[in-house]
Image (tube, rainbow, N blue to C red):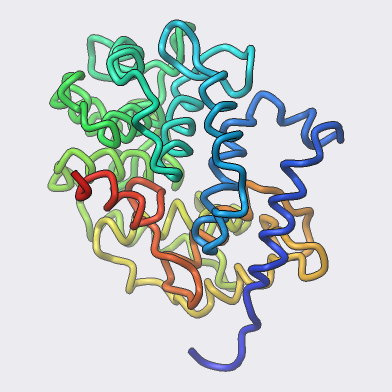
Length: 317
């Protein structure tokens, strides 16, 4: 490291996350009520990466998660909300954090996910049928964590993702859609989890991704856009999966993330001096984890869960 960058205000971020969970009535929590499951995943994973998960009432969280499950097998973003594949993965990830995947009816949840695969190999997000490579990643990640990838046609799923590859080496949300760093993470992650990374042109994609770093050190999601802390995750995890992370200036990226902290009240924002939220707090801390920042636990770039959680799932039998 060069000159002193400033420190991660870990303790303040922990307090910020706990406070967000307690404030059920304010504007932010009302607006995000339908995303509570995702918020729980972002907040709890941040706590785990900072070594503070034990301060949460695990039984309370697990029982709330299970109350969000539908008879279809899928999970909603909150109690009484419609099921969606996005919330279903967050629910599985939250249970994985606590080592509680055993509370799930595996057949029920994996049948729900498998039922969302379309004839062309793509996945719909829910019964309304929106298709997006995000959902392909989510289905593959979820089934992989539950060790049930054989429930879907993996070959067709991979072929659909490859059909979304662009001439710049990146991937879009559907065939022909422009490359975007968030979609690239989803496609590269899904290909990594299915052992299919040979479909990626690593140098071409690596160039596109490392060109996302701007003067401030932050990363953007597409050319000509402003940098945003969340791309510290989407871009960097993709670069790590294709072995090209050494192509960006890591010290400058660390400095950018650290500058996006609210040093008074905790939390991390998209850019310096903006309002903080749990989403950017998680992706900032997860980005620092990928950058091997001291005091932050290692995170798995494909599963977006702490490495020790992934190891417990696959190696503790």
